[in-house]
Length: 60
Image (tube, rainbow, N blue to C red):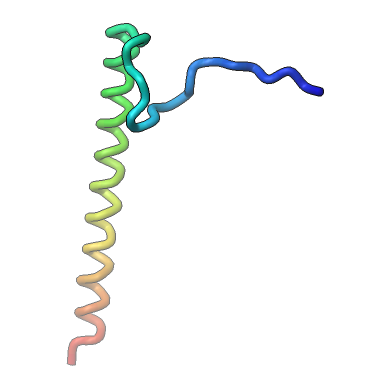
């Protein structure tokens, strides 16, 4: 049987306990989450552009 390696999570899990994290670790998670928010906003914008293009293509 393989031994499981237990370590710190690589990302942030929503709702996880934050008490054991340092200020530096908390700031790192904020940076990570802000980058993810920007990625999500870009995906939303791309879908909006795709929708506009589709609407224009099917407009008579």
